[in-house]
Length: 238
Ligand SMILES: C[S@@+](CC[C@H](N)C(=O)[O-])C[C@H]1O[C@@H](n2cnc3c(N)ncnc32)[C@H](O)[C@@H]1O
Image (cartoon, rainbow, N blue to C red; front, side, top):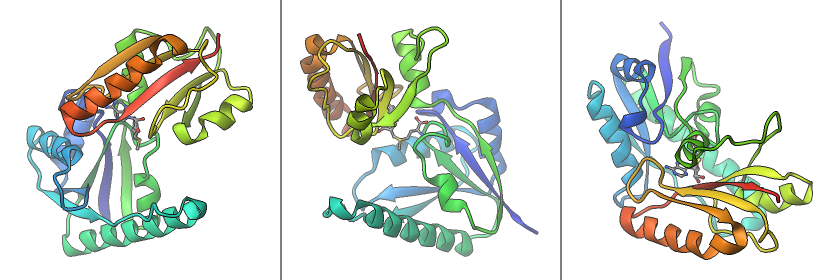
């Protein structure tokens, strides 16, 4: 009989778990979660709390293989190697334990998440349960629509922000930021958020030239409070 693997978006924490996600968590024999290194991983603690609140299935922690970040010139190869090591680690965890499995995904599996690529090729029957994503929460917190009436929104990463602006994108959601490179965009408007729905939550909005320092300070404060920081923003041309 084919095993079932449920990919479950849980939003940013237990408060976002939909009834459908709760049912999925309760239905599996165990959950698998990747954890970074051997230090305390606060994002793993959020997953553990989600599990505890919804039926308390065991959480099998799979150590995340180290990723070679030393050579950005060979970034695609480093990502490929890391991906293969993660697939092997996940396959090993599934082989060790029989039963139906759930993988808890931060936010929603459709946005900047590798789970669906990781499990592609495993001999399992997959279903996907959606969750609340960070851009949705950003929009809710700022009480905004992510685009102007009938207009598009471009979703990208901090790494690709410059090329998107150069290509003419004028309304962007920017995720996976390692800093804040907004030089030359002083007159654009930004709606920024960090650690949404979690410890250290912070919001800043305004003209980039006016609020850039506020964003940087709020980012540092969020990290100091929570021990981690994840942020994203909506950026719109004047
Ligand atoms: C690996 S992606 C995962 C996105 C997730 N699948 C989703 O649906 O939102 C992580 C990025 O999402 C954004 N993000 C995730 N959680 C966040 C939070 N609680 N507050 C602010 N941004 C968050 C940040 O841009 C972060 O770098």
